[in-house]
Amino acid sequence: MATLALLRHGQSEWNLANRFTGWVDVDLSAQGEAEAIAAGRMLRDAGIVPDVVHTSLQKRAIRTAEVVLGELGLTNLVPKRSWRLNERHYGALQGLDKAETARRHGDDQVKIWRRSYSTRPPELSDDEWAAQRADPAHADVPDDALPRAESLADVVERMMPYWCESIVPDLHDNPAVLVVAHGNSLRALVMHLDKLSEDEVLELNIPTGIPLVYDLSPDLSPDLEPISSRYLGEA
Image (tube, rainbow, N blue to C red; front, side, top):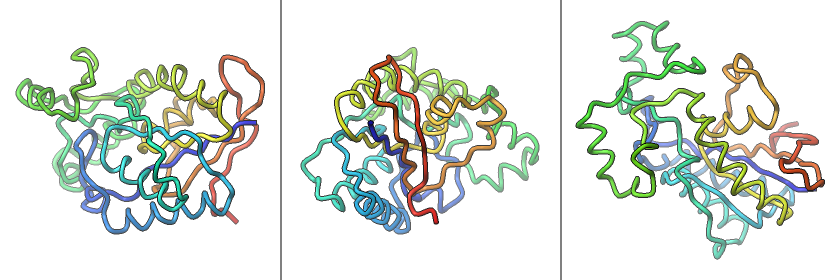
């Protein structure tokens, strides 16, 4: 049996400020650091010690992984990183205050942008996209894959190849794998694992800093089937 632990990064500075974040590379807040420490301790207490760690390219996920590995005494374990695990790209909404955006455009419109499965938010302008292209943080992302905005459906499409080509082989070869990523990239993965419909995944919320652990079937099929799942710390 393989164990897969999914962890949404701790609270970020822009989570705290109630701003759309997306691909903007912000760090953890003080609470986020504390959540990462707690997550590491929960994994340790549950006896889950990852052999491989995957993260996005964004510092809030990278920092969370660093803190967790420190709590587990695995500071020499180097995570694998991929843009395919990045947060959903919120386009022209990135950096905007969520409450102010709702006042300007209406709650219904903002809900569609945030919670619709296939509707993208307003896209980056050409100049904004060019500035994003020039950012060294995105050097590994091909031009045709660097988004102007994304829906959750887009996140599923870009995340699934990484699941199939990188995470699944690691689960076949190792007892435990940890993925530290973001609310929407993890929703996309849980949608696949739990076979959620488009409507069901829209109701899914993944909390920051609490590991979601899957026990996966031991067979060597191309994909691994969940046997059970649980959040650590639940009564």
